[in-house]
Image (cartoon, rainbow over all chains, first blue to last red):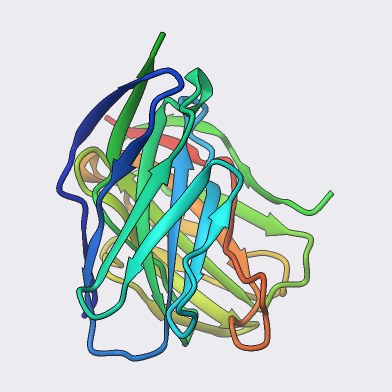
Length: 114
Length: 116
């Protein structure tokens, strides 16, 4: 079974600063997908960024980027120029190539302060 | 608009009273799943379906049933709800990941269930 670990239950960052959220995972698979989801107070699950394990290049989406270290099984999320609207719970998730299920970490609650 | 809908959004019920949470998607996706979210535990998969009439258990299936009679619908059934099923429930749908360069699971808005 695959496990996903987010070691930071809560984090805080000031507006316009940069913050990195950590995620590690455990798997024996070689092909898989990794995701970061954002859950604002509305509770909607919003996909922030995805990474295919076979791609060496780190994914980037505007202010969001990842540091994917396949050998270390690490998948951290960097948020640059943090905005108040980034305040949310962030979940790291893993999926095998079969696509049947997302395995989620327990989440990191991020607070962006003025 | 491509979306996953769930109903009801909020439900308060009593122990033992059968209930169904509906889920519908308009994207013609083969895969559908149900997850529950509990504080400190993240989201955990309850059941999933790979296509019509094909369903299987996820990580926490006890106390739940599902059916997939139509491709677009995937209802979650609690035959005899108990207080430990108080949770936030999400339905999700997706195409198979292979051959989908922009693969993602699309989530419904969530259903807040309270069992007293």
